[in-house]
Length: 180
Ligand SMILES: C[S@@+](CC[C@H](N)C(=O)[O-])C[C@H]1O[C@@H](n2cnc3c(N)ncnc32)[C@H](O)[C@@H]1O
Image (cartoon, rainbow, N blue to C red; front, side):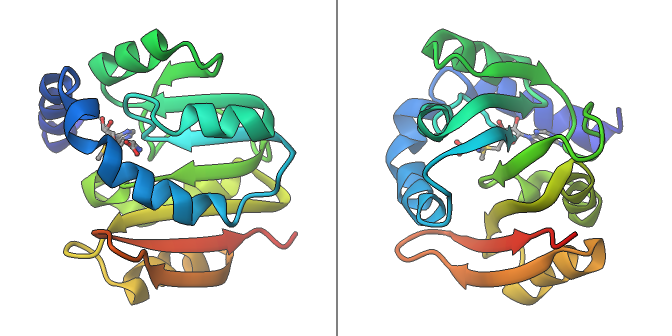
């Protein structure tokens, strides 16, 4: 693993113990925006960069099968303690350990500002997505513009439905779909 990623993993490992206390309210604001785009029932969902699993319960209410992946083992340990029933895996967003066209829905909230080549991660989201599946990702607006974020989807062959600032939050959200 490259040194930037190792450094980040170390940083999030150190954050795991107080992440929920500091960020739950901030993240929930973003989840409300994401949820509006999710179908009420679907098959398989993946949360990439799931962190402590704050969004996994919500996904479990809607999807039959939910997996969360993260690069930080300590963040995943907190997610495990949450008992959401989601599968959890230590994995890198730029190289996801899933077969092509596995998921109906791929979600990634406040991950991509951390990833050295976010376009590679979005290409991975596309690869593991079923036809007509949905990908929703957010990133910090101080790090990425809506234009850049839109470009990652278009470059991967995803159709952009919306790319907007989330109200009262630090993130931009892109809602995209695989058309075939
Ligand atoms: C700001 S937190 C967001 C966590 C979660 N999505 C939430 O809404 O609370 C970013 C997460 O991305 C993870 N992460 C950073 N780089 C990653 C990578 N290359 N692959 C997978 N996860 C990564 C971090 O370990 C951290 O848990």
